[in-house]
Amino acid sequence: MQRLGELEAVVMERLWSLNRPVAVRDVLEELHGDRPLAYTTVMTVMDNLHRKGMLVREKDGRAYRYRAAQPRDEYTATIMGQALASSTNPSAALLHFLETIPSDNIALLREALGEHDPHDDERRS
Image 1: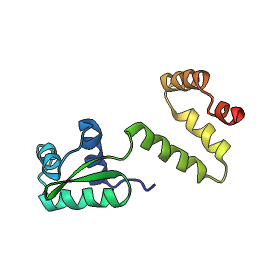
Image 2: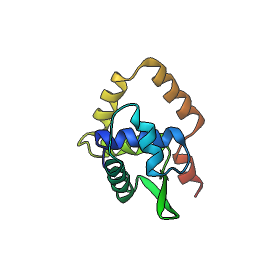
Image 3: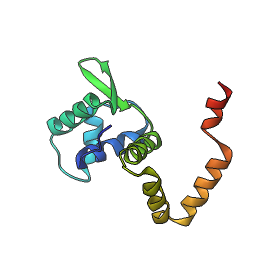
């Protein structure tokens, strides 16, 4: 999964916050207050996101309605996993990451690890 460009990220943020299938025009109207964009620009960005697998689309008359292919938190987890997997020393990278995150996020991590061990599913098989 590729990282998102600036406008792609803005469009994805809007789609995640709307949390429903939307037309290009809906996104254009949502973005209009932030920056003037052409309809074709937003349409191209959304089509690119669809080709990248970030958006799912369904036909609605002559147009399409788009929705995020996965929730924001799953996308974030995928990006984090890819970054860790691309490291030549994942252990060191993870330790450096843990040194940089705020203590309240460390508490969330400890809580999540206590509640769910993803390897339990593998052990049961």
